[in-house]
Length: 435
Image 1: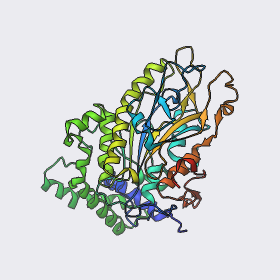
Image 2 (image 1 turned 180 degrees about the vertical axis):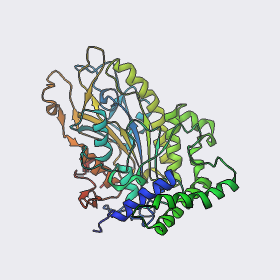
Image 3 (image 1 turned 60 degrees about the vertical axis):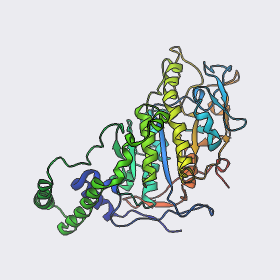
Image 4 (image 1 turned 135 degrees about the horizontal axis):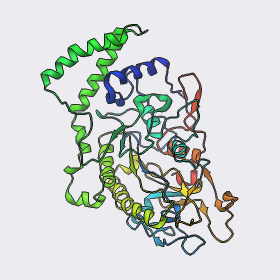
């Protein structure tokens, strides 16, 4: 097995490039591109694999989404509806998404140990609990590091970034997600604000002055620095003039398509995500907030589900129609779930002890459910694990996603201090993966 690594030169050059060219460094490493290591023998090797994360910021309630238990103790006001997969029911808050469940796998028994928003977000997005000595890379950063892309535009994109956006961690800031907001607006930092002549003068004269000033008094190879800056700036200029930027412009879509995704920033973000994957972007994270329902749980969760429902259904359908679902992993979930019991303010609090995540596409077996939870009369809040059947850890979920993306969870990377780190310490959940 080939060992992928990041050496000290890579990290120094990325930091230098970021200082010189800002967002241009999001285009990826200059020195090399790594080939994805495929574990499954029947993967489609002709097309790169990608991931879209529908990030439900704040902690969606499993009881009001993918694991409804109406009529049970603290089941709440939600009802169940049938789905396109025989024998699987989800909450009646997601009627459109219910038509795509035959293409998804629902994991209902995810267990974690973090109940704080920031720590739990790090855990879910990276597969590791926070470590004060090391910042772990997110799933999208890992995918971009382990594979190449033909895109001129950034390969890792965050649309409507939340409080804790995806980061490159020890892989370097060049793997941080490129942040954009509502696709109805302009993309930041990709258009010239001065004339072509003035821009050329700045590149020819001022940049050289800045580089010389930066290098003075530092242990920096000025010729190497200038070469790296030139490469990065050429990449940035290619991005600024690339037709692939049109993928962000959802206004190019017919009115019926826009209607199907829902007229919300999140809906437009999901449509942009599909368009970006089509032009070669490897990871897109789209954030939907409004799930932190410590009070008025039912109304808050129902409102957030209304926005999620149309966008997620339309996204999966579009990927399938365009033959992109086979090579695009869709992940839908948040940092934790909500408590089985409804509190005095008609809300549900943080609950990492058995919640749901939905996966679709890219080697995921459709129409299956893994695990189960219970909030019946025998539920004991002091022993939450007793109410979870076939529990899996967050690391197991990450290992599953890596396998689906054609990567070996056991692959080790070298951190800047020489510490080997596996992509995941979990075990893939075989029940939700195609054989």
